[in-house]
Image 1 (cartoon, one colour):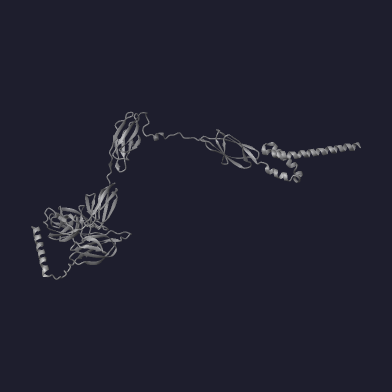
Image 2: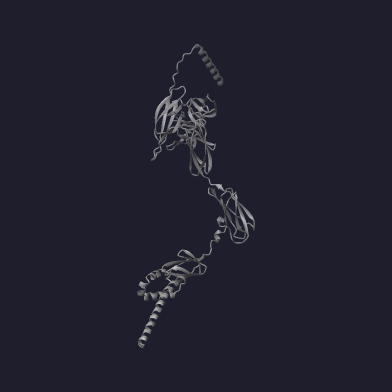
Amino acid sequence: MKPFTFLFCILICCASFTLTVSAADEDPTEDPTMEPVTAPTTEPTEKPTTERTTELTTERTTVKTTVPTSEPTATPQVGWLTIASTPTSASVSLDGSSVGVTPVAGVEVAAGTSHTVKVTMNGYEPYSSTVRVSAGEESAVDATLTPITTPAPTAEPTITVGPVVGSDKGWFRIHTNVDGAKASLDHGSSGTCTISSGSCSIEVSTTGTPVKTFTVEKSGYTAATNSVTGMPAKGETLDLYATLNPIAAYGSIRVTSSPSGAVAYLDGSSWQYTPCTFEDVSANTNHQIKVSMNGYKTYTKTVTVYADDTEYVSANLAPSPSKTGSLYVTTTPSGADIYVDGGYLAESPSTVPGLSPGSHSIRLHKTGYNEYVGSVTIYAGEQTPVSIVLSSQSSNVGSIEVSSVPGGSALYVDSQYVGLTPASGYFDATSLVPGYHAIILRHTDYRDYSQSVYVPAGGSATVNAVLAQVSTGPTQDTTGQIVIASSPPGAEVYIDNAYMGATPITVPNVASGSHTLILKLSGYSDSTQTITVSGGQSTPVAVTLTPAEPTPTEKSPGTVAPVIAAFAVAGAFLLGRRS
């Protein structure tokens, strides 16, 4: 009986011990799991997890299905970083986000992934490192920053305006006549400045290297370099003076007009007939071109000429609304060239229409006779007669008669412009010194014609020039010109019913093709014809006008007497003027 009682007591003790151990096993499972959430530790967290996982796998899988499933998810997968630097107080960024300045301790990061740590500080090269932290571990990053090396400044001598030797300062004040010019001492090695309001100043050291020369220069002017004979004392200013002279430069001005044959004036002095070119015109300045022609308003334009360049002026003259008069010229002998206000108009005897009221110059030329020069007054609505007896040419001068194809060519004698050749007949250049003279003829779209002509004393020379046409090139010229002459001259010219002027006349820039030409002159029948103009060519037209037949009218005896009386008064007036 006693043995059984002893055995029973042992079994009860074993059962009590088993229950105690089971209760103890359940409590540690929950306590260690929750502790790392609030108070991270290193060893207690891992040890209970590892031991209990293996021991309770079979027993707890069915009983504690819910609890073990959620426990691994809540376990934190983090680590910690401590970041230091030499020197300290450097800025720290972790994965692109700022986390403060060094030293930085206990920065929580995700475990098992790479993290980029950057440490920066002014004056030091940036530091960058990649670090990987395991779960529950703490890693350290220690960044030693490298100073940025700055080269020692060496540009000081180049920015010094003047000499740096010595501490006492003075000044040179440089004067010149052109603002914007550059002034320099010793060609810039001792300082420079820009002229404004006639002068500029350069600071120098009074005890430094003595200044030897100063230079003033500007584009378009000849540079001026002069010697410097002394240095300024402390606080003193010495004045230096230089004058800039413009570099001589020339250009040209090409003047055309519609209608052509107008008088073009350059700066109110030299003049030529259009079309013309003024050569050797001073460059880099303004010039005034004035174009005038009887019966038209004066055209004025200001142009700027540049060196080795040609400026172009095209004047479309507008008819003047003012009433005009006319001039009737006869000469003995006849056939003299008539020039009014410098322009060739016709051969005597001839009527010159369309002259503005007032005084006009008149010149008469005929080979073998002395030139006549005078003036005449024109009245509105009236015709002024002029009759001149030409004197034989002196034995100590000569003359040249010039014709050209095409007509309307500009004639130069010894480089002096004298006029335009007529469409038919000769241009007479009189009162020339005996000897050789250079003849040049120029015409648009033609090559210049030149010839040396000998003029005998008391005699004359003849030039018959045919100008060679210039090739029009790949682009065909679409306009030509018409050179029109009539006998008698002075006829009004209409092309396609548009008034162009009076014969003789050269009409430029006429479109290629057929055109209707009409000539009208009082006392003569109108002449009408169709002409064809070719691009780049001159079309000559010569017309002999037919006197108009008087219309017979019956006059009563009462009307004859006043007519006879009128003729008597006119005759007496003419006799009075001759006397």
